[in-house]
Amino acid sequence: MAWDEERRLIRAAKLYYEDELKQSEIAKILDVDRTTVTRMLQKARQEGIVHITIQGNHTAQVELEESLRKLFQLKEVMVLPTSSSQSTEERKKDLGKETMLWLNQKIQDEDVVGFAWGSTLGSIVETGDRFKRRQADIVPVVGGPGKMPTAQHVNTIVYSAARMFQAQAHFIDAAAIVPSIQTRRDLYEANYFQDILQLWRKLTIAVVGIGSPINSSNLIFSGFLGNDDYQQLENENAIGDICSRFYTIDGEIIRGEIDQRTVAVELEQLKATPWAVGVAESVEKAGSILGALRGGFINTLITNDETAEAVLELAKE
Image (cartoon, rainbow, N blue to C red; front, side, top):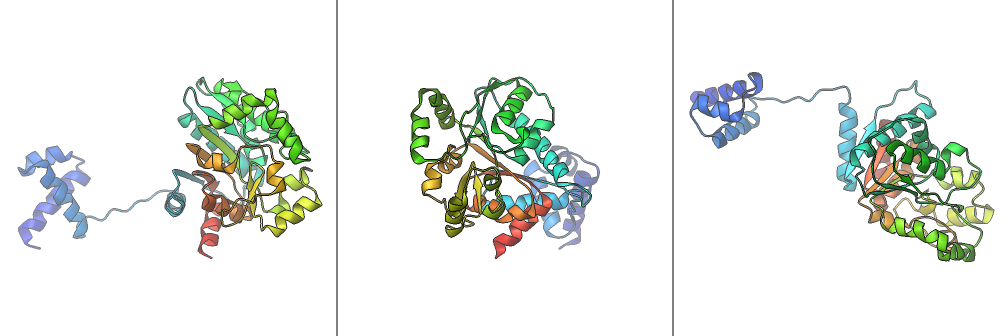
């Protein structure tokens, strides 16, 4: 590069990066037009005159976010930092806190916001935050009763979220998985259940947990599934569930009797929801999260760095 050209590039770079002048101001000083300044700054980087280094305490987390977002074509990813001193409960509380802050940025009047149940989503109950009032509907997207702590019950989560946003809460009076296909059919045909079905069709945001592999699933411990159900899911290579609907690590939905006994929004409906947010953490769930991402059941992920790393490693296999 000629000396005079390099000199002009250095001068433009110093004015822009060190003196923090606008490109229009630099154009006047150098007596060129603004587009020329833009090209000069670009060339200064290409020629190695300018090196940009991004530094920060959470650079690693942002890189994980970008890797996940690009690999699975997600709308948004949030990866929280973790420390070895944190307990599982503390990590879940962090996810719950960040989920509600994220929702506060997204929820608008007239939105229909769905919540599932579980220990991670139950952590939202404990945040105690209060936000600006929203004329929105908060609704369960899966049945609730079972052997679970009150804080993890879907109606508790819906009530708490609605209270935070001073929104309208709707509740569900049905189990996540009922004893027979006929029981589920009767429930869906009942007049009182029509409001829930209508709201499911109008979902704009859905916040769901991602269930563990079947051998440690809450659905087993909560009494929703028996030995025969467990064996069927094992035979079908179930890796995890969302809203009590199971899928494989390749993102294939497992159809059959259990699916037909499930009282929950369909996974295909989640795929059509503008914001389908998966909130989950733990290395154990890496396969479950990977299956959900491959299936496209969620388009937004909120997790932590240890879990994100495990998902990306598993995706390489």
